[in-house]
Image (cartoon, rainbow, N blue to C red; front, side, top):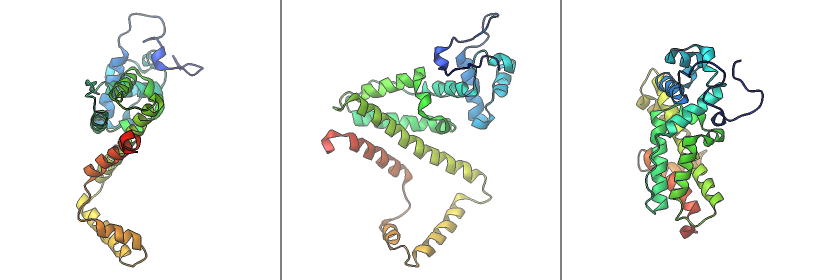
Length: 238
């Protein structure tokens, strides 16, 4: 396959385009933008070299001169949406700044619902990912812990955001395929759950349910999860 390397390499270390010929017709940013448009409109599974090439109006094989592997295309996509992070001036309140970063990351994932599927650490070395990591470390400067602990905090916080947002997205996607409303399904499931708890076989679960005063506020649960991660790294709370 044209452009495919025989050894591991980083897409960012490659020239924009390999091979001889006329001036490149596209930049990586063009290719990434086309792939993001496809993923946003049709889902990640719709992204292919052929589809991206058609979106750009070029031949599929010529695209491999710019992007040798589909995995590299994914990395370009993650970098492209990473540009949506606001690199604001840190306020000096590291907790507030990191909560702001987390909420913004969640908003980006909700705009681009395919992002949680592409979040392994291998994509953390793109230009925009590195800029965001540097920004987070700037926000964490007032926190008196080693640099390695700060990067651990950033990774854990991003993991919580990714997990919660992926669950939200999966729930929305699932409900679209159901022939009944979410409310109808929840009512049936809660009735079944109530019948099982009422048997007395799950006393601890029954006690937990008795403490619930109403519907679960999922936004509040998400915020508490973020706060608890920050608590674990806050020297003032130890």
